[in-house]
Image (cartoon, rainbow, N blue to C red):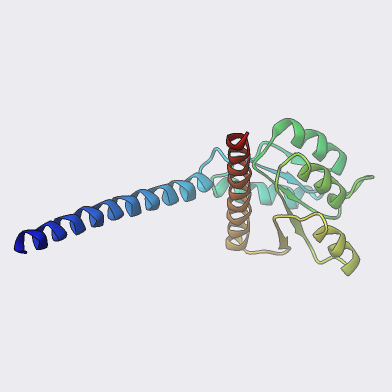
Length: 178
């Protein structure tokens, strides 16, 4: 009986150690994911037609360790440039000068699997309704605090990363069934 008690304790310890090891690995993966979100290799394109606002936003993003490969002023140019650059995220003003507003540009950009967060001053209800219909990854209302900007970016990139992982998992499971 005493030998069985020792065996049970040893077995419990082995399972405990395995569970602790798995927990530590999970925490490390989680830390890596959070760190990746903050690394310089993540790029954000700014679409803003007011140059002073755009340059201020660019400086904030660089201070947060993001790469800013382009600052774009029109919706038409945004669609073409984003398709070529393939950034991790687009920060899009709703009201842009030119034929294509930020909402229309966001629809086109979202269709190529690049997340868009709207950065805008308050707009009328109809405009906000149109913007919501594009399923953006977020809204940042001007003026905003730096922390709000950072949190919105990290949340959007994290959600998009999770979305891609789910799609990949579904794709792999579908292939295995065939």
